Image 1 (cartoon, rainbow, N blue to C red):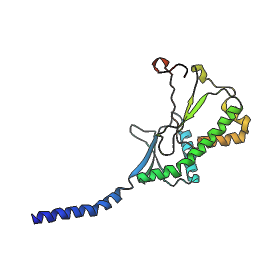
Image 2 (cartoon, rainbow, N blue to C red):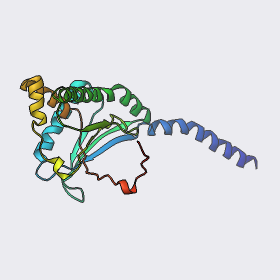
Image 3 (cartoon, helix red, strand yellow):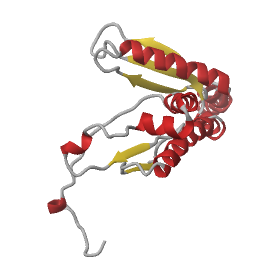
Image 4 (cartoon, one colour):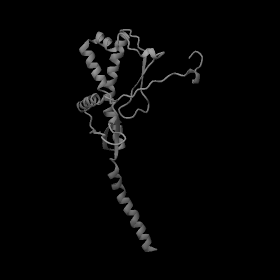
Length: 205
């Protein structure tokens, strides 16, 4: 019994000694991974935009390394994997608090400039911006554009480019658009049809 007790004590001591070492070794095992698939025929444009975005991250002081991999075989061939590894969970909080707002501020400033031009020119655009609560590091912005029917998707006149050029001049308008397109990593779009017959809508609301 004494021998068994000594063995158990030795085992417990070993666990306590090894415990912190093992935890420390696994501390930096969190990675952020994104996968993007360019639209057909848009690979060159995607790579150009991605290179521009990477250059901006370096200039803006992004402290993380981001490795880009092009998938050449398998189910996801043609897509791109972007990965930053070797982090702790606390690193994600620090990154979101320090660097995340830089991209968001750049994006929001460009959106604000566009919105002011639309309002000043009294353009017939109906839209709303929103930000999901669980958008994660870096943030997500959503743009909802409202139209009564399919004809509402026809190009407007004047279009947004013409409105921006009239308000800011061609050179400044181009800079604003560059700031806008260079401050996000990708875009996902969808069309939704409102179904009042399935909705709960109170009178007067």
